[in-house]
Image 1 (tube, chains in turn cyan, green, brown, blue):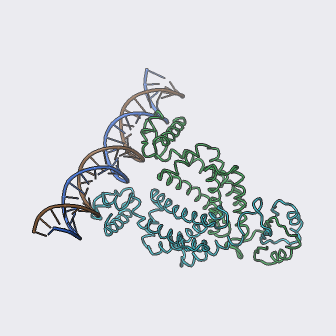
Image 2 (cartoon, helix red, strand yellow; image 1 turned 30 degrees about the horizontal axis):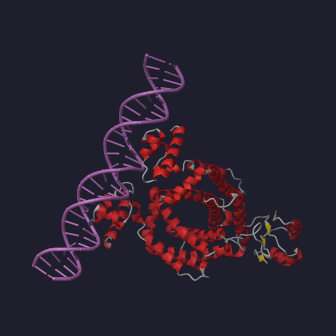
Image 3 (cartoon, chains in turn blue, brown, red, orange; image 1 turned 90 degrees about the vertical axis):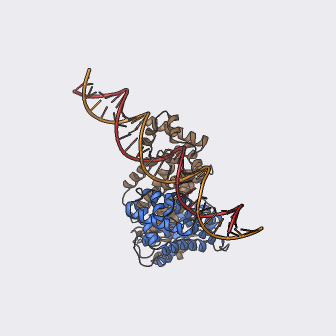
Length: 231
Length: 231
DNA sequence: CCGCTCTATGGTACTCAGTACCAGGGAGGT
DNA sequence: ACCTCCCTGGTACTGAGTACCATAGAGCGG
């Protein structure tokens, strides 16, 4: 519906003008004029003024959705991690564009809001995929896992956007390992009150106290049906 | 700066008109007219058209911030849980208003976006508090915990808004127990090497096995510096 | 070469959100 | 009675977004 080169010219013009004179001070007419097209063409290419700084949003969303759709039935968790990795590499490929957008979203409230709404669409995609696949056996657990992956992704991405950290992909892999350890290690929710595994777990924190010091309370807790927290 | 009763009349008028004839079809002038005030007064009471369906947003945000500010230095995690509980109880108190808003945000894209942006402000508040308090010893771990609490809160809230589930506060408490078990159980990303409380907690799940049956592994776990999960 | 169609484009006009500014009016104090 | 302060409503303006129409050019069949 709209020329591709015109779209790119509009994007470039918009970023330039936003940096030069600010977002509010730039009208859509200014952008269109610099790109050498009419105002109408701008609105045909991007539904709204703030869409222009997220030129690949829709296509990336589709790419992640396709990735999820292609995932093997038993590969839900890896697919989620891969999906997050897809988003991260996309930002890395954008390079300076992504960083320019970050600068803008940090300073312009309207753009920040638009960005948040976009990120939420990813989060929702991840969440629904996790819930549909029944990851964790429990919708809440599925949401927690999906959102933890998204959180870790955002954490790494934000560091890269700020110019902190050397190798974002390496950081991503480490962060994902953290997240998966978190979820893999605990056995998930369903503990007290919910259906109880025949062999329940005993989770132990490091302590400086002797085992003997905590044993009395421990014995009491195991005898009692109610879970307890000992000092 | 603006009469309180006028604010309430505007809110009521807006909800009524949005339900009757739709959000886009309702102009600010319509709302002001039904409330018996001028258009100018509307914009003085609410910065924008979509703010009118979140009349307590700002005050609730302040309440949570105050709660965090008042938290004891060693009570970071409980404060986060309490903050989330504060938000939940606020929605429960709103009752039908919250449900009407939910209906609107599900159907009107502009309102959905506005809601997401508002929720993000809570999430950010929680995240920054967790990071500042150094929860988990590691910024990533802090973010994961904060976002997990928010996710669990949203999960419970959403169920209540949809009319699913009987006792949201009970569900909330169970969900929080799940979340804390998740994070308490694995030692988190910081794991071995992170700062450890002098008095660590031992969380016990119900088990069908004798204490003697798990004791050897338990002793081993306490002796070892690394957290372990026993069957 | 002419005429036809289809699509991308630009222009015009309109609605409405949001802002700036000004004028009036009532409450309360002196 | 006068003055001040604050709340309020009205007016006028900018700019985003939409609807509609006119046109130019590309491609195609005759």
